[in-house]
Length: 227
Image (spheres, rainbow, N blue to C red):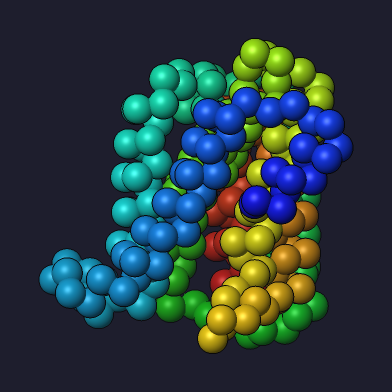
């Protein structure tokens, strides 16, 4: 993230410090509390014995909601509304289909094998889209639009820079790992999550809501279980 800020400075892109730090801060908090929840899961009676990161997702969702309540951002700013922009449902529905088709085809080509445990299916149908969309396509996107915009105003340039940063950070969170102090890259995960992340961001911008991104995210993850 620091390298990205330096590159933007060198490219002459003007940024506002407060929303930029807020955006990066919420992502860092997400990367801390999500794995923390997984480590604590066995110690909590209600989640002990579960294999998927339910507690981490709940922690991340709670932190994201807390940040939003303290941020001054409105529901419309982050897409926390059921209202869809006029004329957006048909193209959004087509993009949901494309996202799922890409994700499922990619998984089928990789041939990792299906995993149809009831817990996995329930987890993938509910959890990933809730916290990840609220963190990346809602809070981070809104903060970065204000960071790159002129006085917080949404412009074509601010949308471009914010969207690129959100998509990159989303992909990095799925494809970059620190193992014994060394950074390792899962190129398959990086490409897949980056492509899907771009589609989810388009849905967020086109509909003005998190509804379709959450639907597409969870549906694609759920379907991945069968490949």
